[in-house]
Length: 177
Image 1: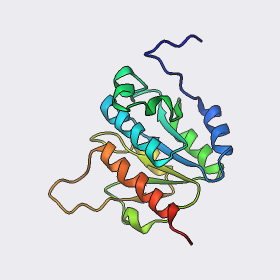
Image 2: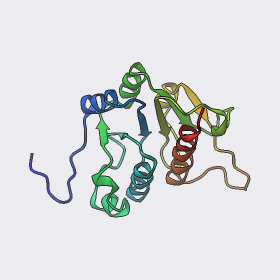
Image 3: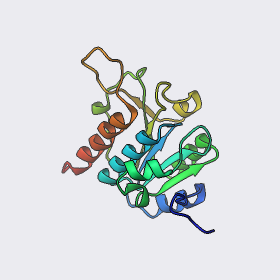
Image 4: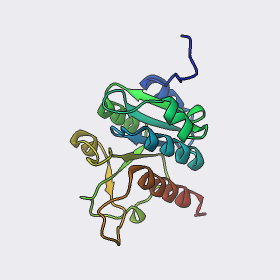
């Protein structure tokens, strides 16, 4: 396959599973239908900074790697493995079978993000702009967590919320003990 400057090849589900199997403590980010290329670009930049091993997104109803995503990511789109999968729920099941715990963010969660143990093999699951996670995606999460909000707005932008979640996992993983 010839790749143009605007087209970055993505991993498929089997490539993703091989990559996860190679990691001592896999750290994966799962995006459920993020559609704004500016959000995906910012998320990829944050994922790179947090040391995420791969970002997973569905092929349908989600943005892929575009020139805008590449520009906003400031190069991270060229470095962070990006898997576009046909069936996100099935991929999540396979990740769980590979030993990852999946933590989804939801305003319906009863626990705060900071109450969960994020140190082991982990997949952080983020929902789409405005709608959050789809039902089946949420059902495939082992745990749901909320980011506590003190102000008047109900939630953060998905790229900002992703940064909060990823770097809480980074903080916990760096704590000795």
